[in-house]
Image 1: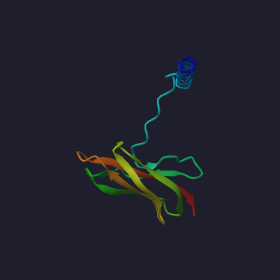
Image 2: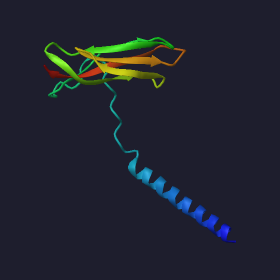
Image 3: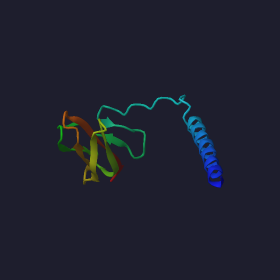
Image 4: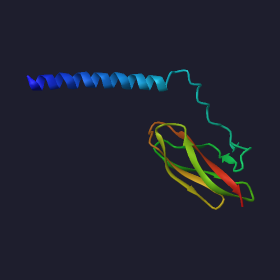
Length: 128
């Protein structure tokens, strides 16, 4: 009898906790949030008003099942202080992200064996 009562108490506690979690999640995501803006698609300056402007490189195509690199350079007189990359598919993964003397490079693996996918690099630059 004691184990049946403990089991019932555990079940009720679980239901209350799950209901509270669902309420909390709903409170955080009401669905009224504005849509996330699309990332820029054109290469060039992403944040020109910043003290440390960001530049986005050209979009490169990574062949199906292949590996490639995307690179972006800082303008003359500037050095890279950060950077990263972006892919066009969840099946395309950044494998490397590193600075060079003039910009930023990302390594990209396309695990989709059926089609090519896209990637690009971005860099944050600071006056040298």
